[in-house]
Image (tube, rainbow, N blue to C red; front, side, top):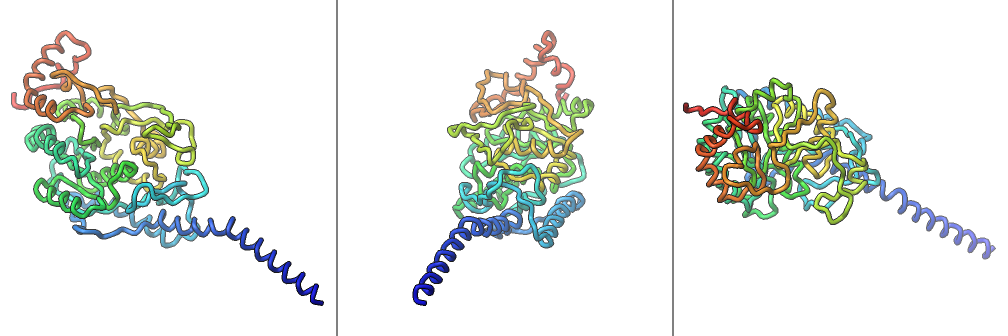
Length: 408
């Protein structure tokens, strides 16, 4: 009898041990997935220092409703849905450091439903495009707090009030949040002076550039619906607003308003070597080819395409390379949307331009501040130089047709 009792106890002990091992191996990860998924699908919007409600102007109410409707539909889905579709292998937490990830046991999917987080404003310059008059181009410029010198140079050159009035363009600088409260205060203080900055509720880091880009597109749709084109660029870029405005009519007649316009590749390969700045694992992106991309240094899109990207992006799982992510959105939209390559948009490579050469480009990358100031002061002489060359140059012939002085 005593032997049978010991046998039963031993059997129960072994069974319980096996059960605990199986629970830890199979069931516990599933519980972690549930916790992770709560963060993926329903991120909590934090109200931090300097937070304020988004204000609107009357002409933008229709566009603002468009974005709000997208968010409300997704919020309704979050409340009603029980089984949530797995969106991504790795999702970067909005408010934490960019290396803190929630890992799921599946690879990144091509589609999801409302998995891209709702992005909110810490502060906003919502009167940049106020008024009933159409604007040719609104440009959102990605920047960080320690680039104040670059921003001041842009405010003296192609993003100056004088240039914007002459060519009918507008600009804003985009920021995420810093963990340092002093930095957030200084950004807010700078905006109080210039009223040309917008800050979103996500950590400002390289791995979060996609948040910043989609945040900028959504801002343009909400607060600048009277702009014909929306442009994304960086604070180390020369943007030839005069040249762009002069040639916009050509893109409209070529029916390229449904295309992302820039220095584009129609196919590209993911970087699989770990030493690369753009290294991507097969779990993050399982396909062998990207669906093309336009260099994030500077590209343009029509207001209509901006609205479509804002709409479809809620259903495209996060991917940290912003230029690839925008192309993934366009791929999801399908025909008639696509990419339109123009070589005069700069790619990511820094090129040293000689005097006046920069005026032959739509954009130029990594231009030193002193050169940008000198070229801006010498604009009139450089344009006369190009106009003279265009008489005998097929390459520069467009200047003879489209570049005219507005004060002539």
